[in-house]
Image (cartoon, rainbow, N blue to C red; front, side, top):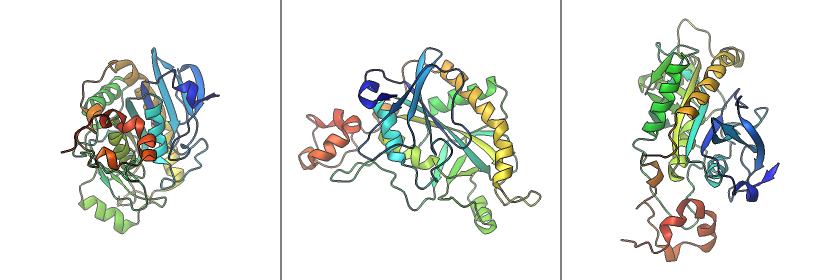
Length: 300
């Protein structure tokens, strides 16, 4: 295992956050494990860094190895901060979801373009402690990265749905029938417990973010299907986890070395607090995120 200090010397380019059932990526070489310290505490687990098609990839299991951390208890800020600290610019998120539409069948894959955050008990911003910033979230997914993931899905023969809205619920319980039926009236496409929080933090960290959403069930709204159970989810998950791994490998191969999107400028002109009023500790903690915007910045 290497430390965060040595990790700084070898930057990763692409980050992968694995959800339920995805704890490794086959094909990675020159693998090493890196433990990252952050101002927000420990990430979900150690990062696994390796090479795939000549590109450095950092992998992190969202719930920890062995699925030990509940959705609400995930240290999202430490996870995204750790990716930033490693030099990651693009994050591919893999997440099991429930389908909220008839045409998205269990086993299908969705590349959402929108999120609706229905969580209640999470810190979904790096800001506070004496500094305020307001990033734009109108388009929460990097369109460029989403297109690459869709292209990768086509290449591996996935049953793919482009676009749509991911509703992020608190969990860890699945929906009641009343909740599921209400969510259907909101015209959402899939439901999960993690990705909206990640998307917000990725935007604040100026990272590209897109999701491979693996539909495992019809939640509990479907009149002809049994209510969602862990056993049913796991049975479908085994099949589409393999598809998602193939998609990740294709996407890594397809991604251009440099970004042409605007994600890397997401914080520009968003910091509202004059630099002289930001506490020194906050400046130090957020330096990987805001450092380049502070020196000599003029506040209107």
